[in-house]
Length: 572
Figure 1: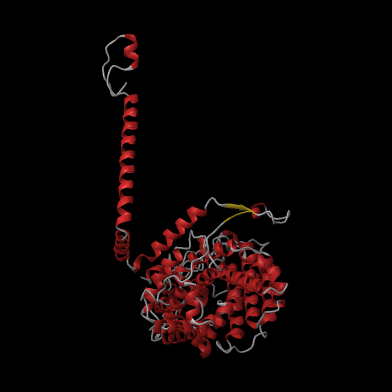
Figure 2: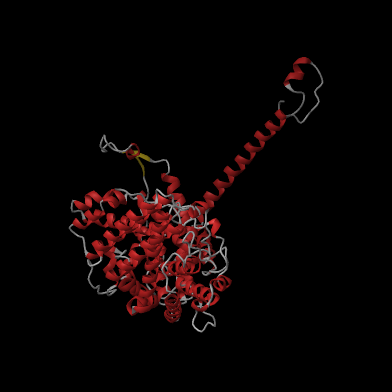
């Protein structure tokens, strides 16, 4: 139609009357006209605003100031995310082809995107008045002078830096350090710092503006803030891989300090990943790359220290546990086959050799005393307990009950070895005052170690006492002493410390078993059938080793070794 009036071109040619109908063609034509009109109006409006803006320059500034007041400090994370999105939008498709690359480079190495650098001088927890400078300094000192040395100096070259220097480098690293420090000083500031750390860490999930300091911050949070550990590990591994930290190993051996620090940080990420994967029945994210396979060579670096030797010993131990996981899997309901039993024995010999290699390697440390040497023993017993617990997988199943006497006897020996390691762990806690003083500082892996040893011994004492050499009275005394010691240790801890929750769980369990101090009944004075009345009868025909399903140990489950289940309820 011309001018949107009948008749239409077709009817005019045929000389027929034209009836207006809201056809698809007409709707489309009207839509085009409407769009043209709106576009013209918008154009006129923009032109008018542009002219007025030149005459009133304060208009825009006034609006921006009012908008800033409305945003407030709580919108920092939204601003960070928005800035990241804007920068990444500008650079998303800016791909650079690197003609300087070697012809033998990996396919994707030739292409890389331009990522804007991390801005400096961003607001932090102090400038935003979340905590005072005085308190921040106290938390920083607690972490830098003590906690950092339990994990082989995660801060690296920043180990002697001032709080002011760390604030300039990374608001996230500052927050992580202060949050962990506040937790171990039982400060009420921990709740605020926890929330702020969650906000800043979440912003890294899709950010491309990452640095090594972000990886350090994530590792610090993962090692000590239990309910965030696995989430933080995943982000840390991704960023470490993006930064190619795993490729720094060979250049570190050639004498480059920068690559030495990067390779060292990757080994820390490897340990952090394995801390929160293998003991929980999760496959590790990090691989057995060159840096891990040749970890001993790292000590040949020009800058290697005793802390690096401690680091390497941990890498080797977790690599061992990873091999155990790969060999036997995480299905606790599947009993070991007769062919797999000799592999357990060979793994045990390899672990004994590893302990002999490092047991007398370390001297007293200025910051953490004799922990480097004693920690080797504790970690050895934890790895041994993890290995030997495989002997009880699928206990009570048809296959387990039909084993030959020789294989059954060998599994009993392995289980006995695990029982001795569990006892050794608990004895170290109850008898060594120095270890007790470190419990409010050691990473959460040690709290899990204690809970695992307790559950293992109670399970063994109630269901396998006929085949495993066990002194019930000694176990009772050990458990009673343990709960008394732990209650004394946690008296000054922050209520959100993992050991506080674990101690409460152990106490409730021992009360139900009659082993807690002052309990009326004791396991040693009860008949076997009476023991099962106190500790409920577990269905071993289904390989049951799960104290959560049995409602005995609350959130602490030994079948996946995941004692952190439900901990998110402990943190606001």
